[in-house]
Image (cartoon, rainbow over all chains, first blue to last red; front, top):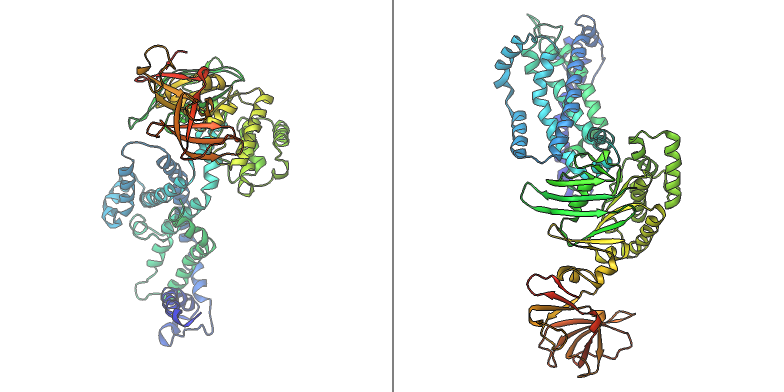
Length: 272
Length: 345
């Protein structure tokens, strides 16, 4: 690196440090005994202990919120990808009046401030007897995740030449078959990106999960962590350990697919 | 194989563009029919309607004796070669060839046999396990062709299949297509904007313009007896010259004033000055190897309309000189000045 170009590297370094440090600190803290956390915390783990993790999975049964989160985020993702890709395919291919306003509307739905719909949704879900159930979380998540899915996938499907599925139809495939055999395999990077983003969104969601669950039996990871605090003390060590457990899978997922995700988000920006 | 019949086929797009205005066309069993015309004339739309990729707004399409107007593409038993080839990028050549058969539930052994046969015929055997991205343009073209052939469909549809090939490959593939047609005895509907392609390939050629059929005829008939001025100007290269009917006296019995005279560049000869029907000033001489293409301006001072004449290569002709032009009386075309229709003969 020559002399003129040192400052972007420094800026980048500061940025990475600023965003990575909290996570690093959570990891270090989760291995530090409770007593030392507030007396003389060290930037580097000395005498690491597993107490917090042990407490997390024995005394607290942290498996339960993890399972809840997996079910809710997984179901949301699966539904979003299946329904959303069909919807996006139609939007990408069909010409009909009002298509642009419809796309705008879909985007607008996704932009809605969550807090403004919590109360009406609560009443609605209560009427439907869906409070404190998995569908009671999946359905509201869909309202936010689906627009994202549809938007990303419309961009992806538009890139694919229409002649491909025409060729497939002439070759004897019906529309759905052509979609499944030709379009889906080609759009797989986009579909994977969308799936990961949807999963991360649903995994991290807090407000709905807090509002529409009543007890630990349906609480998701973020809600469970938030409710760790006891009457007299806040178990910071366990909270940090739980944060690490909750963040690790998502981080690994994104790291594993990061090239695909960048490809997916910039699809159509350059060559289209 | 089967015949294809279009009856009063119409297509108006939602934006008001009319791509087909009542097409009536009968393509007989085993015929190589070429639809040709300038871009936007509706030829591709007509082909896509036969394929079932566009829905006509009026009229009927019959393949064999079956009315397929309302059937989706997959139920029409047709195969189509697209301009971009539309090969499936995620499948190998073998899978591309087998796709249509697989979609129709053909039995495995039979698929293998037919794919083998087609790939042998097209010289694709060495590349069967490659993906389309690893193929040359010519190979991709042959895969697209093979994908149509293995299906053994009732009708083959070609949408400008040669336009993405370079000139040399285009000529070779053209000959290959003609051979293929002869071997398969297939009914083919072929769309192109290139009149030369149309003339060399078609058993019959249908010229379209603005959604109307202008003329349907075997290539040489069309060349010798174009139905109107548009067809006359479109077919043949270099294009026909059009002159005012009364420019040269004595060429036509009857009212030459209301007529336009059409003469092909090949149907005129250059002679020495004042030995022909009219004198002209030589403007540009283009040697083309086997012949000369000479641009002249009629009139001894070159103030008349421009004409192109094809002359034998040994003709001595120089720019800025005056030469005589002689018309082949047997090969003059007369068109109505207003309607452009051909006046007999």
